[in-house]
Every structure is written in C-alpha cells, then in structure tokens.
Amino acid sequence: MNESKCPVPREQQPTNEFIELSKSKIFSWPKTKKSLIYILAKFWVGAFLLFLVISSGSVYFKSSLLKYILLSLFSSLSIPLFITIRLYLGWNHIFKRLTSEKVEYEESGWYDGQVWEKPLVLREKEILIASIEVKPILRNLIQILSIISVLALSGILIFQYNIF
Image: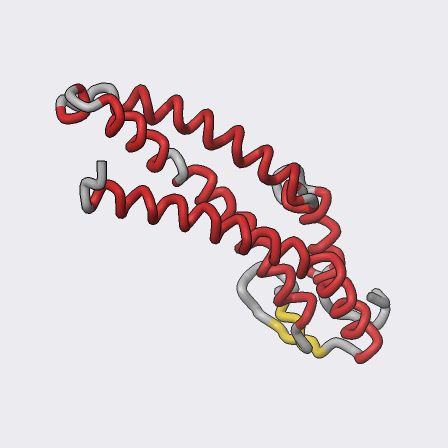
C-alpha cells in the first residue's frame, strides 16, 4: 500500500498481516500439506500416549484392552482437531481481510474503529494474493479437518453403539 495515501497503520494492512502470518512458526505449517499432516500426526501420537496414561485409571476399561486403546486413539484426535481449527480460523481471517473491499482498522488502539475503502489496484493485488497463496492453504485445512472429523465421528459411533 502506498503509505502516503493509506491511513491504515502498517501492521494492520492486509498484505502485511499476510506476510507476518506466513512468517509465523505455527501458521507456516499448512503451506505444504505433507508437512502439516506430518506435524499433526506427531501431535496425535503424543496425545495418544497422554490419553493412554489418563485412561489407564479407569476401572471400566481395565476389563477390555481393546476399548481402552480405541478410546485413547479416538479421543486423542481432539488435539490435532483443535490445532487445525485454530490454523483455519487464522488463515480464514486473513483471506477475508485480503478479499474485502474495505479495511477496518484502529488508529490508536482505543477501539476507535475506522473503515478505509481500498483502491481498485490494491484490491486486485490482494485478491490475487488471496486466490494464489491463501485459498490453497484453506482448501488443505478443510480437507484435513474433514478427515479428522470423520475419524472422530466414527470413533464416537463405535462407542455409542458398542460395535466391538
């Protein structure tokens, strides 16, 4: 953005917010789908081990080792699910800021919200950034969220109807 014409503070400009989010250690995970799946799998295994320890105190599951392991496996999906939801919310916020016609900002931080309408050239540039950079990330996150949700719901159904 041309700083002489743009009243929006530099750190609140959508393009700069996108750059900062891209540089962030956690929010850069979804840039490649394989790396995100690998990281989420690590969290899932770590959470599985933690949930094994937590579930080991249950008298109910001492009688069935299979139920004990499956409960830990399916409940540990909550950790990757929450991480993926957080990543999605952050990237979706940036996507909306990049594609909107107007930018909401605060000059002093005292909730004195202002609105600035983007010029056409800037709007086209930011829409291009959103469609090329951010949209594939959101698509990957939605696919991963769908997979995790299906796995978690199948676990709930298995326990709800005592299939095993």
